[in-house]
Amino acid sequence: MTRPGITTHLILICGAIFMTLPVWVAFATSTHAPETILREGLQILPGGHFFETYKEVLFVEGGVMKKVTATTMMKNSMILGIGFAVGKVIISMLAAYAIVYFRFRLAVPLFWIIFMTLLLPLEVRIIPSYEVVAGMGLLDTYTGLIVPLIASATGTFFFRQFFRSVPDELLEAARLDGASAWGFFIDILVPLSKTMIAAILIIMFVVGWNQYLWPLIMTTKEENYTLVIGIKQIYQVLSEGGELPQFQKAFALTILATLPPVLVVLIFQNWFVKGLVESEK
Amino acid sequence: MKRVQFEHSPIPYLFIAPQIIIIVIFFLWPAAQAIYQSFLLEDAFGLSSQFVWFRNYTDTIFSDAWLQAAGFTLVFSALVTFLSLALALLLAVKANEVIQGASTYKTLLMWAYAIAPPVAGLMGNLMFNPLIGDLYAFMNTIGFDFDHKLDSVDAGFVVVLISVWKQVSVNFIFFLSGLQGIPKSVTEAATMDCKSSFRRFWTITFPLLAPTTFFLMVINITYAFFETFGIIDTTTQGAPGGATNTLVYKVFQDGFRGADIGGSSAQSVVLMVMVLALTVIQFRFIEKKVHY
Image (cartoon, rainbow over all chains, first blue to last red; front, side, top):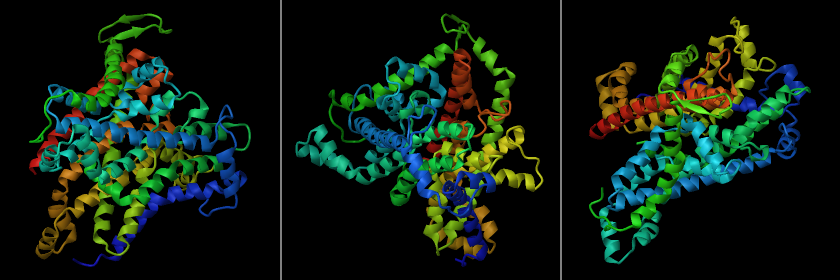
């Protein structure tokens, strides 16, 4: 191999700047006073208003009804992200277990039903989905927020793929030892899938945290906003109010909405990459 | 199918039940409703409805607004897919070459995966804000008469730029892992046979990456169709005059803002058919990849 030249590094540095600079600028600008931002525009260096801005965003009620803080929204986002990830892993592992390890009459049609969810992204059935959830009285509840999102097939396919690669001898041995269907699942298959479960949890947490359309249509009360949908509503209030536009707060909110999923991805980078590449196969 | 399985029993139904129940309630039932409603015409108050066969379809699909949205979606998807793939491929190839700083580059190039499209959209929107946005000022300084609130090409530029930015990292991750999957012996043999790294890339590396590229194309088209909803909703909201409406965004606007349930459902059904086509393509490709 030839040694990579200076251009290679130059291209990579440009790419890295392109991917990071916008977020850095958003952060730097969020730490300035609103007057400074209006007068001078975006900022590349951090200013002295970090604590002021973030304290206000996190703890002082904002929004149209003045009912929501970023702390509340962060809690909602956290519940959505974790609930979505955990629910999805449990439901899809159970379903994949049934499909791979059992012979039953309805196996094929049921598999096709699961498969069909790939054809029905939320976006193409928004209004009837909304009506179903509204009819069940689940608007503005965590159940209504999370459950309709967790049934899609991606997780099931992933675990199906993984279970198929588990050697058959394991089940033979377990059955000789008299293991029940549930026992084999809990004592052998789940411990065996640990890494995979971790990888899927990480990816699904990010996916759940980042949900936009569904939370947008099914939360009507401000105190139920997640960060990702709340920032837009609040941004409108901040920039269209009669007073000085509070751009620093808008930037601070985008940073807060970005931070948790980014941290998760950075901390668990290897698992995350492995899970992502494997799951899409 | 496993060679060894448990015997017939009601147990598997218990395991698969949670997922099936949720799917039936929250996927199949609403989808059936969408199909049903697409044949109905409701009055303005939603009090009575009438079965109108395919009128909603002909009314929406041949309307100028839908055709405009379809045209924009097509151009938009093509641009986003091509640009984000090209950029990601370039970066992945370079990142695969370096040894020094490789993991730092990798982290910096992939981390934006975790940012939600609407958050990226909002950041972009702020940067293009005429009051404070330096990008807005920059575009005007270098001689464009730039105004994404009024000019449809400029608005399209903003949406494409943010969508590409958001998608580069996913493509980068897959390209890099595809490149790392190419055996060292192949690249070494190629290096002996061919001095030009440019030619080596197009004759050896790129064909070996073809399965990854094709797979990513499907992913990216799906992304441009559906997931960019959040970007459009936080930037242009379809403005000016519906010039940046994607098909999905129009379903949402007609159904929720315009309360045209029948028309919006008909558009949903058309989209379902499009997803079906995409999935068929994807699956045929995956079959091929297995034998590859």
